[in-house]
Image (cartoon, rainbow, N blue to C red; front, side):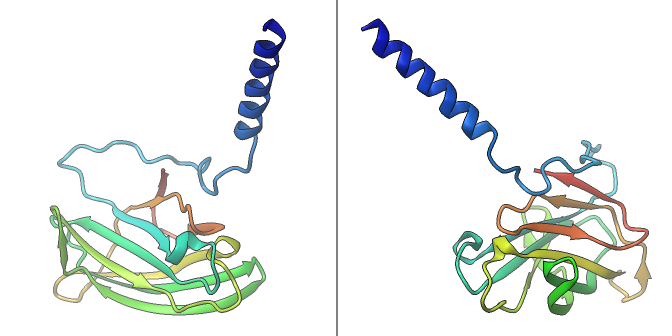
Length: 171
């Protein structure tokens, strides 16, 4: 009986250590981490990602979900989403212009649907957002707010590559 319990215990320890040492989730060690803010502070633009069938099937059909506080002056956003297989191999370049007009629990929300990437699953691809232009409700260019980029569980990587934009990372 002692031998069975000991073998079971060793098996659990080995299995637990194996789980802990598996692949790192992309983005989970990035800095700077998003710090808590006071309710009176200017809101961040939040960006999350999702994909059809959790990003494991082909073709990659991705969706970026953006939301921000109703109290902000940001009302629309333009930019470019690029999809890469490798850093030097861009598969897709998608220009977007969105208007934050969908209310969502005190926030304004909008999605960016990226065109399907045939022959690839989303988990094999990196997504980069750049060339951001932020506009107020009078369509005047304003300084883009800080961006809170949520860790992507469906892409190999998701990042913002734009000078002058303050980005922090969150789970």
